[in-house]
Every structure is written in C-alpha cells, then in structure tokens.
Amino acid sequence: ARLVVLVSGTGSNLAALLTACEEAAYGARVVGVVTDTECPAADLARSARLPVAVVPLTNGRDRAVRAAWDLDVAEAVGTHRPDLVVCAGFMRLLGPGFLDRFEGRVLNTHPSLLPAFPGAHAVRDALAAGARRTGATLFWVDEGVDTGAHVAQVEVPVLSDDDEASLTARVKAAETPQLIEHVGRLARQMAAGER
Ligand code: GRF
Image 1 (cartoon, rainbow, N blue to C red):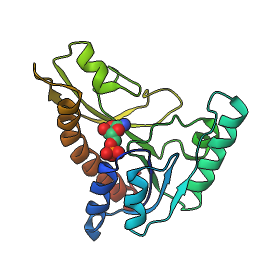
Image 2: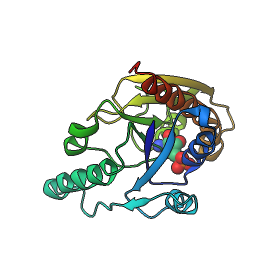
Image 3: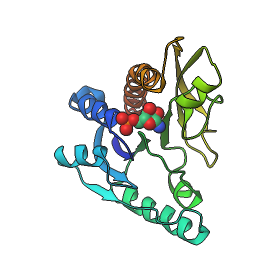
C-alpha cells in the first residue's frame, strides 16, 4: 500500500513508519510527506530522500484561505496516489475540500483515550484534569476535531510525579507501536482486497 504521511512536528512516528516499511512483509511504503510547516519531520523525510511538499496555512481563520489550503493539501497528497494517508503529528484540521477526496483513507493518531481530551494539548489537559490513566487513539479522520471512528486504543497510567514531558514520552512509547501495527495490518488487508 502507498502511504502519504502528514506531519508538523518532531517526526518520531514518521521515523518508526519508515523503519517498519524497510521490511517488504510490512506491506506498505511511504511515497510522500506533506507538511504545513518546516519542521524536523520534514527534514527527516528529506534525508530519507522522500518527496516533501510544504503547504503553509497563512490565515486559517479566513474561510476562503482555509478552503483553498484544503484543496492545495489534497493536491499535494493526491499526486502520490495514496492508499492510506497517515496524520502523524499533523497539527491542522482537514476540511471538506480534503476529506471529500480522501475520507475513509485518512488515519490520525491522538495522544489521549478519545473521546477524552481532544484537541492540540491532550497530554497537558489530561494532567490538568487529574486523570489517572490516559493513552493514545488511532482513528479515521472525519470533519470533527478528533471525532472519527476508532481503530485502536492503548492505555498508559498517569503517575503522581508526571509532568508533561514524562507523560508525553510514556504515551508516545505506547502510541507508536500501535500506529505501526495497525497501519501495517490495514495496508496488508487492502493489498489482499479485504478493504
Ligand atoms: C504524537 O503524540 C501525536 O499523537 C500528536 O503529536 C505527536 C507527534 O509526534 N498529535 P511526532 O511528530 O511523530 O514525533
């Protein structure tokens, strides 16, 4: 299966996907990376000799700008003819101009046990709420904010001396293997015509 990965951040999930894809039996390969911003993940993709498209969103509050950006992202992704689109630390919401073309093929990984703590600060919000457990959710992206159908969840404890960095690290340590497992499974099911 052909994967396009959307990133905005440090790229640890992208790095893990690239490693997994080195095994032919994994059943997927990354064919392109799209980002809204220059970031370590984009540099990682370039050093892996992958095509990287940077599609910045200049004024996300302006509806026309936003709608045009959705279409630009769709074009940057679509040029690679992906079977699956994986948001791996992509910090923008994808609107109808994108999802009309790709919905049902777009996965996101989010660092909480959704529906708890949606949004951009999930780990911080879980700590602030005094949650005793949190985790990560892999889900199909729809037009809501972290509302799509769940593919998998993994739980981790919140420890009494956690800060945002320690809890983020524990969540990621569980989140990344979950992402790798399920992207591979979905890719192989697609190849077998089961999806
Ligand atoms: C992940 O924890 C993801 O859930 C969140 O951002 C993080 C991405 O990290 N949305 P990385 O860029 O893959 O290192």
